[in-house]
Image: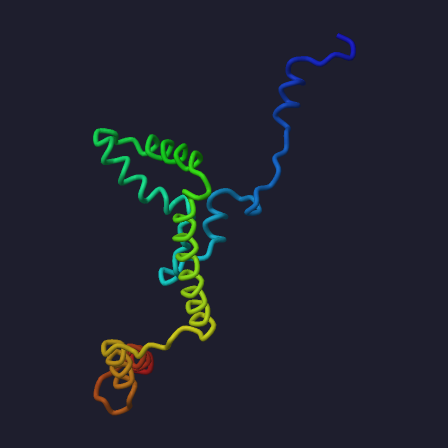
Amino acid sequence: MKGGRSKSDTKSAKLSVTKKPTKGGGGGAAARKSGKAAKDPNKPKRPASAFFVFMEEFREQYKREHPKNKSVAAVGKAGGDKWKSLSEAEKAPFVAKADKRKVEYEKKMKAYNKEQAEGPKEEEESEKSMSEVNDDDEDDEEGSGEMTTTSRIWSRRIA
C-alpha cells in the first residue's frame, strides 16, 4: 500500500501517547507518600457542613424506620434526596448548627496555631535517660578501676 499505514504502525502510534504529570510531580504512590507531612493528632478536626449535620439526625431516623436495611449507600442516597427536597427555611437549623461549630473550630485553630508558633514545649528527660547519661559519665572517669573497650584494645597493642 502506498502512503497507507499498516496495522503495526497504528499500534505503535497508540502506545506512544505521553501522559501528563500528576499534581504530585509524578513518581507514583511512593513519591506521594514521602511528600506528605505527618498529621498532627492535636490539630482540631474541621467542622461538619450543614448537610453532614443534617445527616447525623437523618441516619438515626432512617435506621429506626428501616431496621433491616444495612446498606450505607441507601442511607446516603435517601439523605441526599431528602436534603435536596428541603426548603431554605427547613435547612436553617442545620446551617445554624454548622455555623456554630465553625466558630468553635476557628477558636480552636487560633489557639492551636498560636501554640505551634511558640514552638514545641521542652520536656524534662525521664529518670531512665538521666541515669544512662550518668552511667556513661562514670565509665569515662579516670581511676574508676574498670577498663573501657578502647583502653583494653590499646593495652593489648602496647604489650
